[in-house]
Image 1: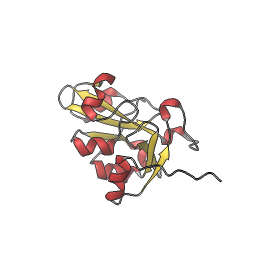
Image 2 (image 1 turned 135 degrees about the vertical axis):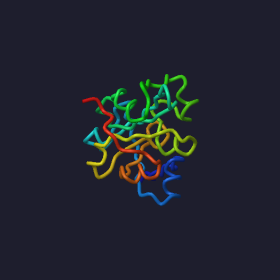
Image 3 (image 1 turned 90 degrees about the vertical axis):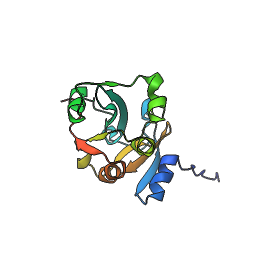
Image 4 (image 1 turned 45 degrees about the vertical axis):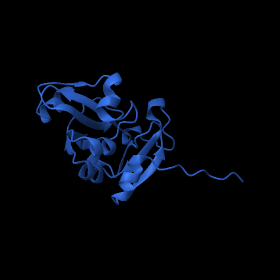
Length: 158
């Protein structure tokens, strides 16, 4: 019988465990549409890094099935406009590569404003990246928001 290999916890999972925040590690690669046993893709949230004309970097978190409203995010973050950070500058800005951006890791290093789309509050839990491509965590939206000092707001396109 094959021995089940236990995945080593990502740094994000270690941080959440140490902080006593309930979560569950998952193997999901949303970039490749590999969502495992997840039937509802809207439960998977992407972490987008943008830069505001006044605030500098700002983070938006919303379902992968939705599009971010840059206009709404700019308004609630006190900017006239925001724009996606180019992929080549992403790791320098957040510490993570495309597909691995996550609010927990970003908050550990930076005090960028973080906004989670308010639709997350309607779910029991959401799935966000665990800091490595192909790794995610299932976590209550309110627990995540409290831990990373995020605000809930309407940031998706109508």
